Image 1 (cartoon, rainbow, N blue to C red):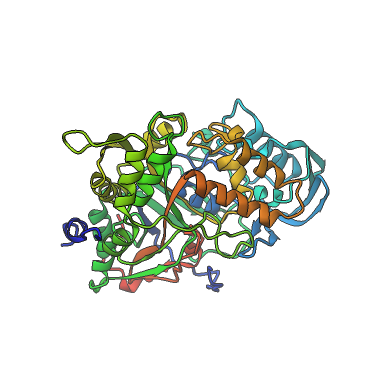
Image 2 (cartoon, rainbow, N blue to C red):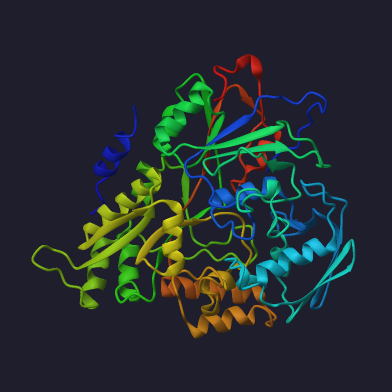
Length: 513
């Protein structure tokens, strides 16, 4: 019997009331700051630590990586002018870029940045990814060479992190908020975590952005955030708002709403060290109890597609895992077999579901809570602001959580999230998952002949062990004040689309405050 939709619909109704090239005149950019409204501000702008979606997207406005990966994963030089990979060695020639404090980019800066990520005392969550960087040498001021302890066919993905001067900051202030990067913008001195103001770097040599200044303001309440865009106090918001509000915004004359397919992979994660969620039967039962179509239809307004793999479909190693479709009877049967029989109140087991205080995330968690109740799983929700929530996940202080991987990942990503050696703080194996067969498969990616087949076996084992429960790829959504022109959503949700965005003065309803 299908899950009734009326409860989800009622909750939703309660809330009611890629980057194209563009050329702008260099001598007359708009002076009105472009204001972006956020639901949660970043806890750091230092790319060595930026693990939240907002933080990682903002770092790309503040600095440049050595290379970037195109949609087909072809590496393209960015801060580097050229590169050469030979066996265990990767050599880069650097371009004539300048940091926002006026320091010319040299090989010693690149060396210091990556060695800082490797340093256990620094505590970068990405440290585990760079452990096999055996030696980093500045051969001359404009040439840097990396020697690996073993050949890594996926190493180029590790050079896509924006380079910053480690442990240094603008204005002799907090490096987490005022990092020194190579990008088009620098953080202005009057910034604070809930109101970050960026100004055009006087040393920027790339194509001039359409706006000389950007502001990112944190507005917790999604309805207030939307109203600020309607009134012109903010110029756009991206995601972080219940889609029902975004759909409602389409009827408002002051704004327009847009959406685009994304790489985002939303999933349920579990603590394998926990005596309850460490049992495969529990995870598998939950997979059959979650009614994805109901949530996608009622809360996501069909602005999502089922997720099968964290890899995008464009990756040659993509394996579309068969989804465990909604089947509450099968979920109950699995729990019965595992010994989780209902008590006199119909409760089979109790779980803690950790989430952030983001209203939309909470709405999704509440929908899943309701669905799990139908199979006798009583869920209590632990709500915390992002920093506390993420800290608890890193420490293993959770049973189940809802998160999204954002961006475009290659198969090297599996080492970061599924290898037993890469539990926090060494990597992102947040669930403390341990399986020797998985470790062997991941290790063989570097030595086997058929890497595509190996990567697909990894995805199949992940599916069999129910490491994650894949949910959906939610479209990127944006609500934009009609005084704002030139913004285009990117598949990875990046803020680089802001580089072509500007405000038309004559049509601005109210001056931003």
